[in-house]
Image (cartoon, rainbow, N blue to C red):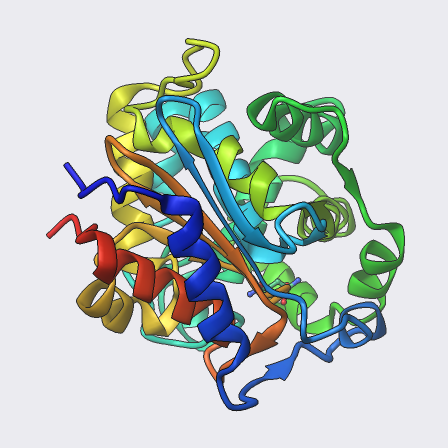
Amino acid sequence: TPKQPSNLSLLLQSLLEEALQLPEQGKVADYIPALAAVDPEQTAIAVATLDGQLHTAGDAQQPFSIQSVSKIFGLVLAMNRLGDALWQRVHMEPSGQPFNSIVQLEWEHGIPRNPFINAGAILIADTLVSHYSASKAALLTFIRKLAGTEQIWANTSVYHSEKEHGNRNAALAYLMKSFDNIEAEVPQVLDHYFYQCSVEMSCQQLARSLLFLANRGEDPINGQSVCSRRDAHRVNAILSTSGMYDQSGEFAFTVGLPAKSGVGGGIAAIVPNYGVIAAWSPALNTFGNSCRAMFLVTRLAERLGLSVY
Ligand code: GLN
C-alpha cells in the first residue's frame, strides 16, 4: 500500500509549482491547428482514490483533447464485446517504434503489435464499428458512465481536422485492410478513431473514470462491474509495456505504473489498489509524451513510493 501523505492536496500543489518553474521544454502537438492553438502553460494534476477522495492542483477542471488516452476506453469496450477472439487480431507486445509507425505492420501481416499504437487502436475501432450499430455514441456513453457525468463531448474542430490530416492513419488502416484484418469499410473505421481521439476530458474526470482499473475491474464508487478482474489485469499489463509508446521501458523504470499518454498532453497512471493519477500539460517531448505531466507523475510516484515493481 502506498504511503498516504498527511495532505495530498498540498503535495500536489507544491509539485505543480515546481513543474511550472521548469525551464521551457517540449513542443505542443502541431499536426492539426486545433491542437497547435492550445495554451502550453496550462498544467494540472488530479488524484482519485478508491475511497472516493479527489485531490487536484492547477487546471484540473479544464477539458483537453484526450487523444491516445482514449485507446484505453476503446480497448475495454472491445474486450467486453469480443472476448478472447480479439487477440487473434492484435498482439500484446511492445513495438519499440513511434506510435504511428507503419513498418512492423507489413512484416507482421497486418496484425498490430499492441492496441495502444495507432495501428492497434484503429484495429480496435474496426471491431467497435463492426459490433455496434452506433459505435461513437456507444463509446461516449461508456466514457460518461465511467466518469459519472454527462458533461463530456468530442471537440468537433479537432475531429474534423484529424480527418483532414489523417493520411498516416489512413495508410495504417488500408494496409491492415489489405491483409483482411479490417472488417468494416476504412472510412467508417477512421471516422470512429478520429472521433475517439477528439473526446475532451479534464484531469479530474479522467482520474475518476479509470478507477475500475485500480480496483480489479469494478468501479469503486458505484460498485458496478466494468470488466472482469482478468481483463483489468490484462489492460494494466499492456499499459505497463506499451502505454507510453517507445518510452514505456523508461517509464516502467522510473515510475513503475501502468499508464497511457496522448498527444493532447494528458497522462493517466493506474495505481493498483489505491487510485488513479491524471496529469496534463500540452508541451510534448520527442516521444509524444507531455514533459510536465511526465514530471508530475514521476515526482508523485517517487514521493509516495507507488511503483508496482
Ligand atoms: N490523433 C493522434 C493520431 O492519431 C493520436 C495519437 C496520440 O495521441 N499519440 O496521430
